[in-house]
Image (cartoon, rainbow, N blue to C red; front, side, top):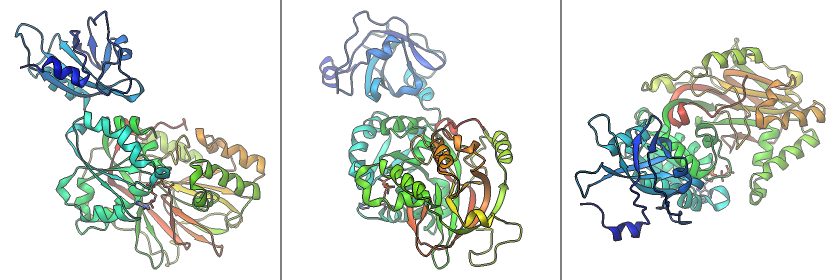
Length: 484
Ligand SMILES: Nc1ncnc2c1ncn2[C@@H]1O[C@H](COP(=O)(O)OP(=O)(O)OP(=O)(O)O)[C@@H](O)[C@H]1O
């Protein structure tokens, strides 16, 4: 039996008798009603006249499809479609699907096209950091992400963190088979905790083979979503996540003397950038602006951050980086399970002498260091492509080094071009790819930041761990960066 008319009114459902057929990329409306109902503002189950004006609803925007039992067996099958329309609101409509190639019913065929990577079948654990994003994370999730996840019928459990380090503890104790995707509704701090929680488990290899880690951008630093889903808008990121392709990415193993080894998924930094992030925590109320102010302050002061850096290069020059990048971009290898070997550190301990085949960065530069920034993902913040040559699982870490002695005008010129990746072109900016590096600070006190978190201020050694973690990438690749 079909749904009753009163039930439809309750849902705000528009029962169109529009006929439609399944195209390659969209459900294409053949003859929409002349008198289209206006969408009801704020209602999540209404008709979006904008999409209908274009006479098609893209599979990329479809969240759900369900066959309605026909009142009359003579008419084409009726399908209730749930989709994302203008302003990322969720809409519903009922269509009569005209021609149906193949034996599967219309809803099954639409869902297969809407979810090429079957994300609608996955079980999600969402970890919300209520403290994240200036205390806004929970609201952002509830208002912008949850309606889309519900409309997509995915199974979702939610846990809120109650203290720093809670996400590590949650993941360390989680039954392995209960979930497929660990979604961090947070900034970059929670994914950092999640991968370390996974690594702390006795069955860590199984955990990295089972769980996919993703971010819904609800924090103040959302580099993971910017890089993997191509947006830091929570609603758009939710849609991108539901349609994304699972892909293995590299992590980095971070070693410091006397500290337990840690995993890093995003970046390590010392100098201007680290200080601008960590040293401006007290300006948290200002949001992202606090970071820009911090950079400006350090650059105007021409602050120096002496250190020693040794690098096991994969590409030492920018020409090498460009060539490597163009050869490897677009590779989309099959997902192969990892073993404990993939997590083993290959290089001598951080306290042992630096291996002979590593290169010592010019001591003139490192005695006057401005920025040291190393990373695995292209975007370190919304619209800031610090590492335009970063690739998901190329087995390398991108490194940027600058000299604080550069004239202010030069420094300002390359820093203002970081948004477009234009800093790569400046001869003053050293950009390389490495398998590993060691950084030994030569200041009494300053900051070392790993994935945006404050780490002990002492020497650190970092090496890449190839393809150990699964995440979700829009179109199976990192967000687009400039041409190199
Ligand atoms: N309930 C809580 N109370 C206080 N801190 C918490 C809580 N839950 C998580 N945290 C900590 O908050 C820190 C920042 O988290 P997250 O990255 O999600 O937010 P953010 O707004 O992007 O912050 P940041 O700007 O510091 O990156 C993490 O170190 C995390 O451990």
